[in-house]
Length: 596
Image (cartoon, rainbow, N blue to C red):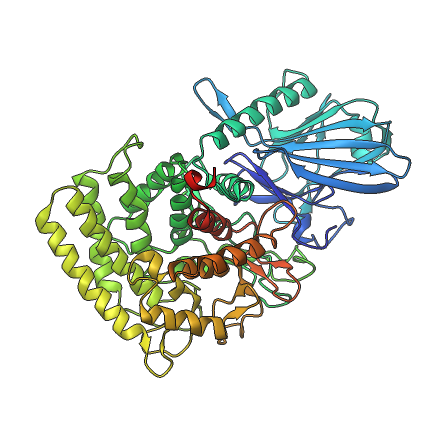
């Protein structure tokens, strides 16, 4: 049904969906983003018609299509034409707006179909699956709706279109606007078309107002806005969790076996997401995320932190395969769950302390950090100080072996360093001295053991020899400056060995699945920021613009990119990558005062 990850994302912080360039809904999970993939054509169900697992509107004798986001919103429009010159517009969105003094964000997808020119003949294919592709969802037919209740999720589609035409997939003339509302198994009292238009107007107003409140850089505003909206859509507002991506099992490279389920909340990724949105002034995401991690810590006060949890805080994410799916382009396995939850990844302590730090500095926030929160964070600091030199699976979640990873150790240092700063902010002189001493000792140890004299560079593991792109983040963390000769030498080594065109590999050595074949997208933004930190700003700007040009037609990025072709691979859209757009744009943009 599609040749690449040229997909657009819709959502409302309760559900998300992915549309291909022809306007087909090819991925959506219900009742929440980690649920059953009701629309799953992206992963190719093994049985049934080619369109199984999709919600498609097809014109007979198709002749071209154009898809765009409505400016500054999460609303997608797709124009479809036919050979006779007829044309229709599909508008897709998930309702999100304020109602009764709270945000209305139901488990709902709304599709509005309108003729633009002539009277095109169309066919509607509504073919949901259930139980991870193991069966077709069979509806009970109502007067104006189809009810699906034979799977783990009950929902209905309400429409003013002919139900017979939809069920039989029979072509009909589109001589007026139609609406489809896929949502909870509840009666809709209003006309579907009237409701769709009302919800569209209010959802558009919501997103336009949300964007209007962002503190944007002068340059690259459209890219930053799209990245910010995508990050917002990647949150599960009910709990405050941040998803790493909307999908599972899009392989990192063809037939690589590197197919993982990313529909969960990684503490590392989430920190970078909330930090990026904070810098744009969108602070509510951080407040929600801190509620999420407070519940994690409060529910398991004596347990070590996991690197990843379910979006409702579930600790156990047992991994299994879904054999009913052929996989993306026929590439199995399709995995559900993620065994990374059982790994030791010591950077999580720094990620949580750094995420919480803004509570002590940002006067915009309703709930400010205080001595009580500081004492709770100190517990994480003690765990970081004890763990920094212990082997772990590292930020790349290696499954076959463990090392003392420089990035993990540096994040443990960051936990102690930020606690010292917070203590000074609170006027707690003795605690500030304690954490400053801890941080100084850990920082010196990390830099001494990360340096490989023979290579003349910082490396990925204590005493190791292999380069790793995560060391590009050390100036961002504050462990050393971008002008430090050790970092300058490391940057040169990475350019020789990990850089491929404008893209950066995370490492080149073999791991559990062999050597990586494609570049890890966000590493290129780390490289851009490292160039800026090293004083090479014009070069950084040029590379940043070329990397931005690799975004898909909707302005989104996947986890990996093939340097030879620019094709996207890996789970999509990856929040880590969208963060990179924001952080690099903020760093490299001209100041408003100088540009105007």
